[in-house]
Length: 265
Image (cartoon, rainbow, N blue to C red; front, side, top):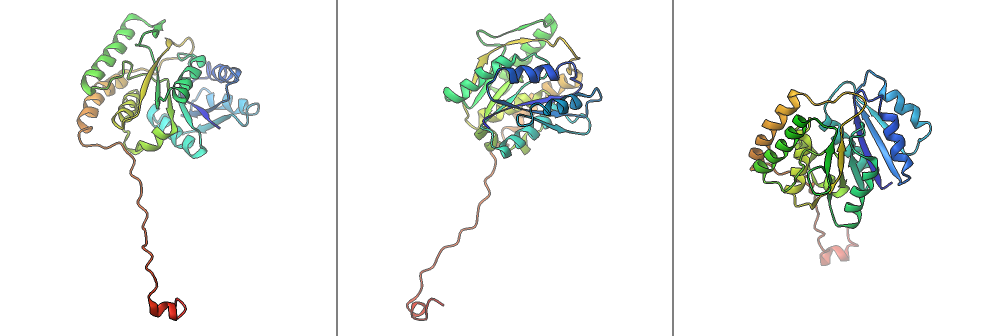
């Protein structure tokens, strides 16, 4: 059990079966954890049916109602750590992320000394297709804004296609990650960077979804704008490192001459 792909879902019945099949057909030993937020369209039922074929590689967590992207991923991170996965991936269900690029992210972390691999649209070799011009402008503007405010050297800070070494997720205090929308992606990269982990952007081609509806809305944009400012301000006082519980130690005292004579009693 080395590689786990976490896929949060809400109303993804048009895509979920195909994306799961595409990952397993690569035959690269990826496991998949789907976290479904009570999709009324039956997304979870589709996953359950597929589990009869992939009982040892496909897992499902169902939650009652929409609770946010960030909380889904954090739940998945904690689950992955408990199960002992060494490399944990984030991925969308709608084929905006090409399953074949999972291996590129894995190679960066496994063989290139990288702690966090980011599937980046905005580095050389990366790009976006099938997005309207206003959406591209919004995304690039958000990335530039984030870099200016946080000083974080990541060209695509809102990217949601990622690979983390488990040591990163074990070190970050996930209770300190407060954003639940797309600003969650920014905060996770920011926390990784602040803790000194090596981040590499791997170029990918991002393609807009063909089936289903986008989850982008005004509240997500608002969270991104104000969230970055809050992130920068709170970073002056917040430590993202998980505290290690201290265990009480006892100093063993040597026996006295009298105790030795008495048999150590």
